[in-house]
Image (cartoon, rainbow over all chains, first blue to last red):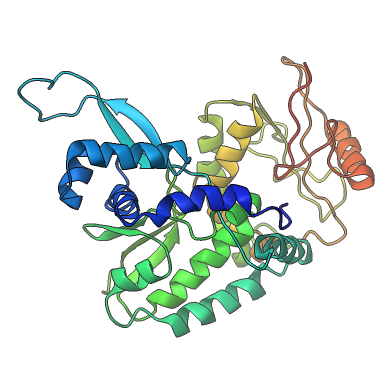
Length: 215
Length: 136
């Protein structure tokens, strides 16, 4: 459990995102389907040179916001086609800074443990479903999910959620928090012709959305 | 809990075979408790008529955790209160390390559960949320 502490570590990391070009580079990497991205793609998306893109990407790596991997990229030809390219993806570590100091995550942990101990999951699910319903995905579903931080990726008749907005809490209290998340999404999806189900895969959110048969 | 043939238990009962098969095929799985000549432990009532048990051996906490929370098993855990209460059983889940090649008994399990109840998580009795490394 984390109590509020010194601002410095979080600020040093997040301060790296203050530069608008660097922030744009970060956005390019974390957008899309989550696959690692090369400096060329970032340079092209930003309309800057490869050297400048690489400079900003490496600053983000140094700060711990991005991870690096090396892989040969398919479909390349010409000089350098056989060389492994340096690829970037979002690091899993979370960073938060709060002024004045606040410890909502700590409080959330206590509340989750209390719900678990009381066996009050069903009450939490009801509350989550009601809130999901009032948030409602009445316009564009993908936009509504994006607004909630899920990073949805449409894959045919399914929508994969690349980000769990409750990740750390879900790691500590999987049934309670994943169940809450499911109920929230079920509420959000009511009347949309889409349904949510628990289907844990890799690093994604534990919920997958699919078309209902009658939708 | 309701009798196992009660309609409210239908989804739990339907999940037993596929989820046990999934566990048996998961890397890191070693052993799980079953009744004599039974495919699972649902017939055992060693601690009282209303208390069902399960017990299994895994090579690492991560392997167990991956199975429990990162497979279809998660949905059954999520729904556990539709089928069971843990009233009077706090804690109801305990982990501990055993030497490779040995199999624990239900008496061991009760003892470790009691240890966890009395002292909280420690190297000899812990939880998935607060695991302890294997002794060296």
